[in-house]
Image 1 (tube, helix red, strand yellow):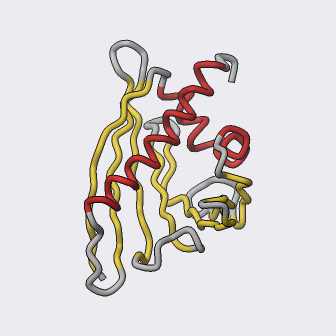
Image 2 (cartoon, one colour):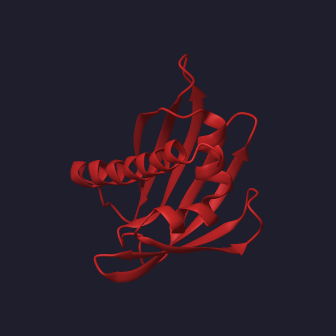
Length: 157
């Protein structure tokens, strides 16, 4: 098994507390409503704390798939949300898991910088291509921008 690391930051124009609530605390309720490919999010184990397993049911390329999302660490005070995609039909066969470590940092203008550290745990000697890394980053940043748009349109959420 190999491990490849990717790091990036995304700027968002809403405060960290609102983004954290939407993307970490309430993801299972909110994302099926605002993200077209996510059909539902089920809590398979736990209630949201570290160790919770969430099953995200998605439609990708017209086909139903799912991924298992395990909460590894959650710290509301520091806006830290670490999770791993540990299985499911939506996880590439070349990967054992993908772990995301993220922290939200408030910007001087009241927005957020979302810092992300991703570890791709590959099967055998597989090496994740630059195209795959770019596509993975684009998916995550797309979800963040959808969430940002929702929060800007719904200031009371």
